[in-house]
Length: 191
Image 1 (tube, rainbow, N blue to C red):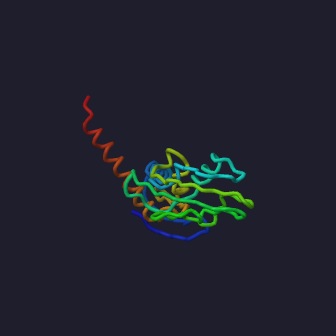
Image 2: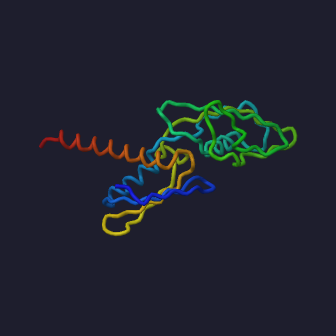
Image 3: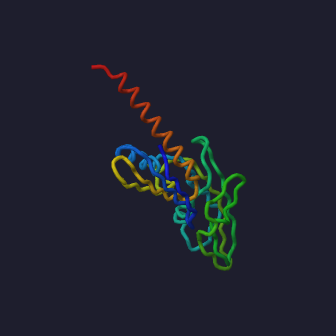
């Protein structure tokens, strides 16, 4: 049972607090799933057509990959395409990434500064994956503490790419599916 639910907006996403009654092993499993197994979007493929900035292509691609992308994936093969085309002098921000269907969480993340005559023209693809693969797909930070007996308080700090309730519901579904699979394997085991 989940109770004492509190939600608070922050500059970098949301803080979501709740309490559950569960053994510590279950609490730790839920925490680990929230951090590393909930699917999210992150920029993975970057196609640079022109880059006359002072930043190397690889570093530019790395910076783009760490920008949180909003949305709850429906399937693992979804792709969101972003386009970026800017000419200096200016500072290029994450909000300059444009897409037909996607949206960055924070529009004010600086990517690179362009001087007079410098240009960037690129296309990038946000793919669906999980935090086990790379930290750029982690939807949150999560900690818990035991209050008393089997009461556990969770503090989840999301990065804004997935709604906090969706994050919790998806984590619980993943944990339930793993437990059901484990029970099936135990029942099929014969000595």
